[in-house]
Length: 124
Image (cartoon, rainbow, N blue to C red; front, side):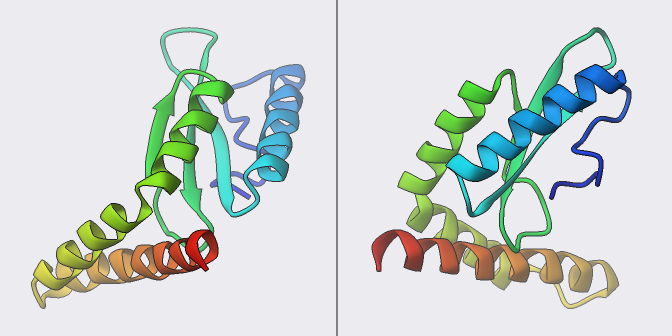
């Protein structure tokens, strides 16, 4: 599940939150190794969608205007998983050994682990 246990419905009516949860559940079935959630934009009655691979601590895809846009972004991300994994490994190697660096290292290490699992699943 995404950052909210209610399906990401913060700031939404019950009906809107229910519809968003249904979309999130549909996405989970179509993209089983991803956590997806909507975020209500402040300026209107519109959601944007974000996603992270299972095991990652942060979203790697943010602010997609529709579920279809998010689905396409997930497919593109998966197609480029080795590049994303290489980038995450480089960022992890460059993190300074300090208090803030340790926090960043933990987030990046979780991302590397998640992307390694994704790469294995997609190529193995």
